[in-house]
View 1 (cartoon, rainbow, N blue to C red):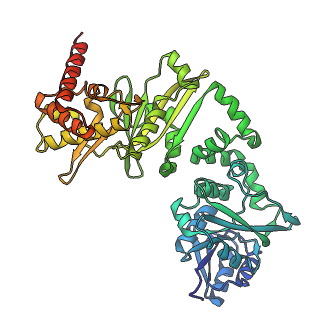
View 2 (cartoon, one colour; view 1 turned 60 degrees about the vertical axis):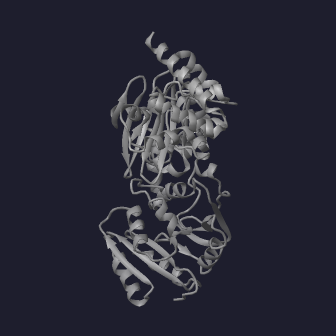
Length: 493
């Protein structure tokens, strides 16, 4: 085995393939690529497939044979890859053949650029059907509507690990789901100009029998990749696949919907997408008033979902056709503040759902903040580093105002902080009400109107804010104090 080239693991799940397995193994052994291992995973075959594979393993040290109770092709393929050692993976079905040069050409291609995620080839049918398997050029938009790539394509093991392997819930067209999972966030697919695969067609082959599972496949794909279909088709993949975009367009006229998940959280897209249906019966309620907050545990992390109250019908019209929903604005503004180094819990995504042609509900999802205290806690008790905390809050406010961002719900409950002794962190929440433009001294100082506190605390805020923005400290103190007094009087009425 060559140590100069990356190891390729050819993985072969086998179930009752005694009649064809030798032909498949012989074609792989004929490969001109030297750094090669073959991992055969028998899926509880009832014929002599396992015995045949073991005979090959005794003769060829590059072949490794394992067996498991019958659990399906996805489990078998995942188990084979888990035992494989190669940097690159090439799945081959146990009744197909590859050409001697395919692996060499594929390795050379995929190693040439990190954005190449998969390398496939031209293919020809043999057996019950003859001729070239003519597939269109790869595109994500087309992948959303049809299974346009065979399983037999070379890819990096790291990508298999990144997406969690082959979906073990799907019992047909598992390669379609796998390619969507791997490629939906970007990456190129290269098809080699040479014929590298011979695809056997049998009357009872899986490709033929899978057609009866169409609804199962489409339902599973929609459940696992809603954000992908939303982006590519404007909504779910429909049973009449080629009509998906048209059906989704007219469906949204009656039930308008917007949906977004941050790039690093696409794995949570099914969770976000299901919120309009599942929020009422799931999660741990941590606040319930005009809006409702719930806490969810997913993948060892804690997330906060905010469900916004159904808006007045006038606002429903506005949020449907003219303005983003509160959830969408909370998401966008959190990204904006974080981009400029202003703390806010990491936004994960949002979804809005409409009924009767108008938006009805919206939901915003974020990581749970690691800040355990709010400005209310500063109002209620003294902290050892109270002055430093107030200074940190004032500096964050000044930075936000210098950028031209005005938080219009700047209340004590929406300013979070933590004191880790080494640093004080401040985060702002409830961002859906923000305005943008020049913020002078008067407007900026009045933004503190809902932060009722002692004159001593207010003076720290005023002096720090004034220093950060080049204003007169005493003037800032007077404006802040007057604004807080007016707000208190207004609330008494």
